[in-house]
Length: 292
Image 1 (spheres, rainbow, N blue to C red):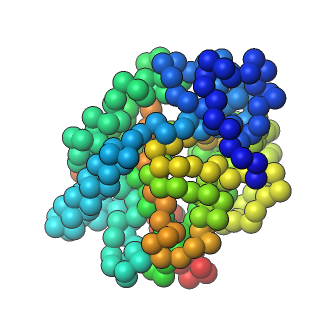
Image 2: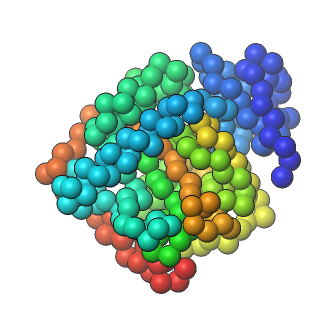
């Protein structure tokens, strides 16, 4: 893998198609034409060091506090969405997927609404909003490669499966992720097939076996990140999360996903029903825990 390059928006080349696919950008006051063209071409962007070490420490503390609260409340769901419990490197039960985290933490909520993210919000849509209480809210995933972990990896998929079931092509959907840990190719992490967001209906449906396929693809790249990096990727791309080659605490990889929404306001609460696809996901995770 070639060394990642970091470019200031002001000095980015005028021909984005010539930029290496491993290019890293700096987030400025607006998303530049070069950055938009890179996203359109490859299906993703990496912004260097958007969050500080102090902010990452704050998020870590808040997650630990939320986890203690959920254990005390004996929560199994949050707003209808199941809490994913697994085990960490100490064999202790822990939360591996936090949903609606910003509704349980004023500090996390202030962070995800910080003005520095305005260019990202506008990239999604001029009227886009942070869905604190919608969909699954602000989600934080914790991957760890240990016995008892239910989040070691995630198979190949696109995020347009619902549209595919209805026989239509998915529209552009952007996933915004903040990365809390250093993650190189050896530590698993996000794999993307660049440009696959422009594929046709057949490849969207059948290029990979959704979620059960984990094999490396000759066209994939690893999106390597440092703590505080922010990524944007088009959900129509084929992507997966690879399993770390390390085990134990060294395999920890945490990422926060912020939902920017443009449709009708549809908040959830504790009376909300569990979406059916979560039952399918639970069954698939059980099968994976047996095969891993």
